[in-house]
Length: 131
Image (tube, rainbow, N blue to C red; front, side):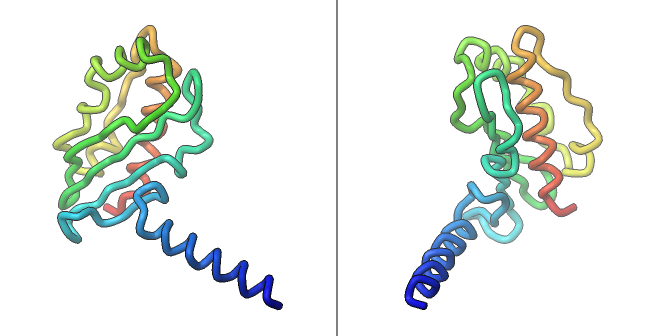
């Protein structure tokens, strides 16, 4: 009985930590209820680039994407830098979530695995945002 109570207590603490953390999906940012941040670390745990997961954080303010940021990953720096320099993460900034969902994103030549994984993470993150 004591073990069950202890386990439930631990799960409650972990659950509340997850609810307050951006790594668990979506949450309202510090700017208020009009701002939402989606972190795909867990949402995209199955999305693998060349060397591992490639999560992103998508910031949305009043239904418009304000920023998409690549989070720490294990991709080869040289190839990942090529993806960042391609402007892939900026292509949806300024668009509404609905517009962004309808936008085709192309993989970056020479860094196909990394860029395709980022694109999949962006798509997963956008699906988590209510329109």
